[in-house]
Length: 423
Image (cartoon, rainbow, N blue to C red; front, top):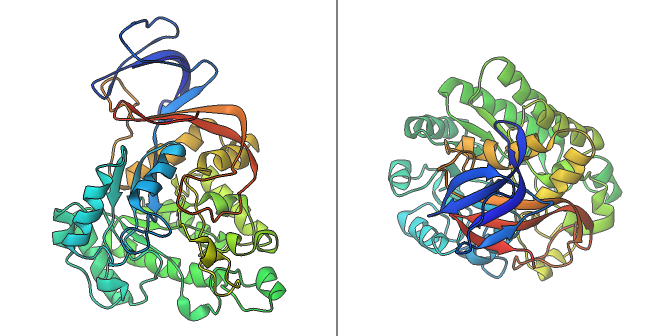
C-alpha cells in the first residue's frame, strides 16, 4: 500500500511533513518525498489535503461483552473505535461475569482477535467487583491482562487498595481507579450544585472525587505503583495531580474524557440523561481547569470512557437512567474543535494525547513513528465538516447526536490493512 501526498504528523518529533508512505508486510517500509512513490502493483490512497498520524489508543472503553451485549459487543465496539481512528483499545472489566477469572479473560481476548484492531483488556482488582477480596493478579497477568481496575466502582477499603497497588507494582502493570467517595453522593451522574438544585436533588459533589484522589495519590506515592486517575472531572483533582508531579512522582497518570473538556453541568438541561455520566459534568471552572491540566502536561491522555446504553435505558427518568455516553467516534473531532481550534494546544499535542500518552501508561511504543514500525495509522481531514447523525456502535446515547463537527477520520489502518474507510 502507498499513501500518497499526505502530511504526516509525528507527535514525538513535532513535525508535519508532506510525504508518501510505503507500507509493506504490515509495517512502514519508508517515508519518501511527496509524489515520488509509484507502483502499479500497490494499492494507492490519494491523501492529498489530508493528514496522517499514529493510530489512536483508548485506555478506557466499555464494550459490554459478556453480559450486556444488547448495549454493545466487542465487534460493534471495535467498529466504533475504527471509525474514530483508533487502532487499539483497553477494555474495562465490569462485564457480567466480570473479568476476574481466566475463562472470561480468554473469552474477551479471543473475540478481540477478530476485530482488525488491537483489543486489550484489564482484569478486576477485586473478585466480583465487590471490593472485598483481591483477584489472583499473578494468574490474570500471566494470561494477558494488561492492568487492573474496578472501574465503575470505587475501592473504599484503603488497606485492600494498598495491597493491590503493591501487587501491581510487583507485576509492573498500572492500576486504574474510579475516584469517588460514594458516601458523599446521593444521586450519581448529576453535579451537586447548579445542576442538582435545578432538579431539587443533592447530586454528586466535587469533593467526592477530590477526597479519594487525594487518598489514592498518597498510597501510590508510598507504593510506587503506576496509578491511572480515571476520567478527571474537577479542578481540585487536577491540582492534586499537578502537585504530585511537581514533587517528582511521575508514576501518577491522569486521563480526561472529551465530554469533560467540552461540556458543563448545564448540558443536562438540554440533553437530559444523554448528558448524565459518572463522574458528572461539572462547572465551567472545572472544565477550564481540566483544559489547563491538558495544556501543562498534568493530564497525559484523552480516554473516551465509551459507555453504551440502550435507548430504553436512557429514556428512564433522570435519576433512574444509567450514567455514560458513547465517545469513540467523536473524540478526535471534539479534541480538534475544543482544544486545537480554540487555541489551547497544538495538533501535535492532541495527537500525543490520543496516541502517545495512552500507550505510555502500558509501556507500549507508539507505532508508525519510524520506518520499520507497525503500520497503525489514522488519516484525517482538519477542514471537513460532518454531522454525527448515526453510530456504528450498537447504542447512540450521546449529547453530540446531530451535531455538526469539524475534523473527520477518513481512514484507519491497522497492521497495514485498511480497517475503516469513510465512504
